Length: 181
Ligand SMILES: [Fe+2]
Image 1 (tube, rainbow, N blue to C red):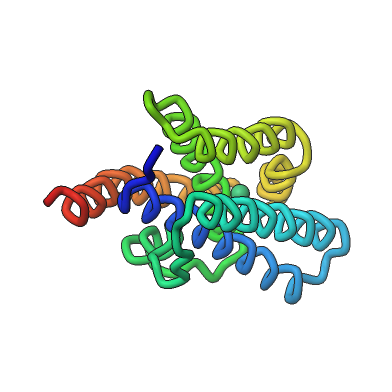
Image 2 (tube, helix red, strand yellow):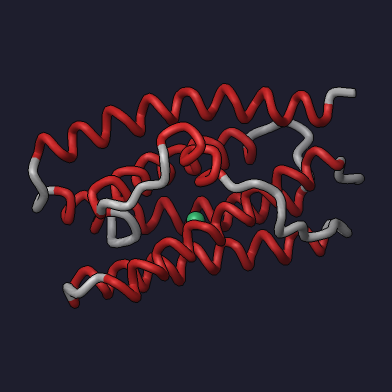
């Protein structure tokens, strides 16, 4: 079963986005000062880096090329909503992205005719995300946000949800324009 350029581009997009998420969490792990929070961001960094590694292996297993220059989901969100610098902004964006990734990988894994390597890869990541979702992987973000002013959290949620809707439409158009020829 052959993998199309479109599929390989999408896998690179997932891979680079996971890595971008790991690097963001890694930056927090080098800058925050609360020890409990530092445990969470360090583990979250490791999880996202592992997802990037699993996707890297899948691309190679499929005979594809890893392209570190393919855009990331975070770059698409920042292009519309700006680069988040405040912790609340960063954490809310991480949560919005977490949900977006879950929805995207689930829909992709359920697609008819999916390559078995792609399905196995996405389901492995999904299993981990679903197991950890109730636990610490992103549950800690909700806990942390409760410690910040409600109005600030709500404003960030409104903003990133709007950006989320716009980015999903744009991304679909981007992939279609690139590969519908
Ligand atoms: Fe991830």
